[in-house]
Length: 221
Image (tube, rainbow, N blue to C red):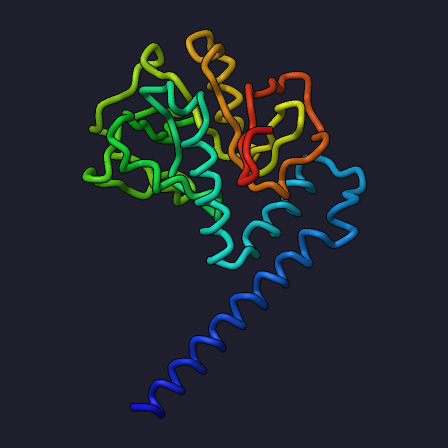
């Protein structure tokens, strides 16, 4: 029994060591001078660079950072006052907001990609999901649709955001088109990113519109 106990302690210490090592490797990527200085990149170059960083994040660190974002949201006034919230299912290591979805004080809506638009449907953890466009998890088409008038808050996944509220997405323009529609234009829309991807300034185009706020694991930006 003593030998087993010693082996278990050794195994756990090795596991902890490797987790810490992976975290240090990720930190070295984030704080590498080339990443911090970020020479003038266009949107495609910046998107590619930041996605590589995000997907290199160790799973445990991704989960910890995501949980901190959830805590920051739960403690915010804008979240507390909402009743119907549109969110997303994490894809390609986007911040994971799933711990929030079990809170039945809120009604949750999630998107389906339909052509060039997003169709929103109510969803609860008891409901089924399916794999949709680009392999993104989405509600079933038969799920009840969400009317824009009922929406209080939109949590928008982002590759990056900047201090002015501008957002860099995947390049498909889905959220840009959504927020340009009159029925959606005045909704409280918040970009969700990890702190390293919240930058002083993003390259923008004339049609880009800033979001009302940005949330990272360090809080409201």
